[in-house]
Length: 301
Image 1 (cartoon, rainbow, N blue to C red):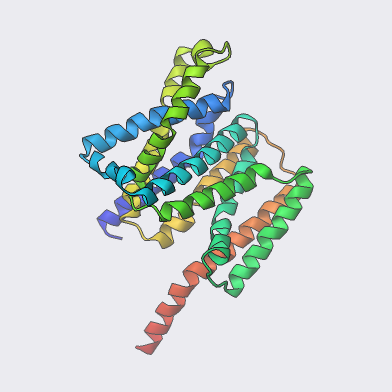
Image 2 (cartoon, one colour):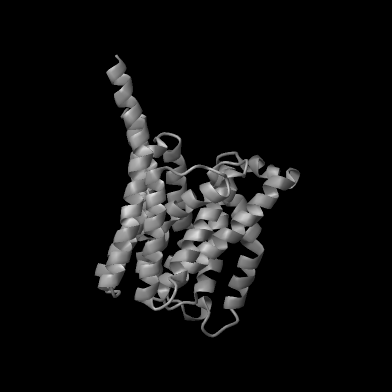
């Protein structure tokens, strides 16, 4: 790697570790209503992202939301999916379902692959067929283990996979697109914030000074990893960024198991193991193609 790529990889690792450790951040706010937290997160993040674009002289890029109905429609859909994902994640963390959030983000790459097959008409290789079979079996095992469908994991995986698909259709870069999504959500977010002032259990009425620091900091913890990732995405090959993304659910899995003592029964270990096998098969299939082509090219010479 050259120096620019190394800086990009460092930024990516910081982003992924930051996203993984967000669980600890939200856990500190577990006494508050998850919907209130999402409202404050969206409001503060919107202020930060608009300020960032203004400093960078890029506010004009948001004009596409007024002039291009297709872009606006995709941004609105993306904002709704993001709301579902964030709300589910925050609810799960504050209600002791951290290991299940890890499962959701482990399943996301497999969901993306399924979307490519069933929506985009892409073809499956043998290894990818095997990975889907492992993922389906994992859901069956984990449903038995939990005594219910692991709905938190499935909702996180489907909302994040769908969000990624819609984002591909938005003719804006990641930073500008997220800013647009936050602006779409800003009115309902501000209404949630306003409503929190009227309830005895609302954040403004029970938060301490330290709590306020954390609540207002939700905008920073939302924006910082995204900006780091946007920096990395322009400098690091996606064949490296993709597997490194597994850091996020690995951190959440370890936090839920070791730090917060969430139950990890034998059947859940088996279910997670099946998901990890599925991810390993996809990774081997994805990275193996370029590797095999390189070997053949060397042999030809």
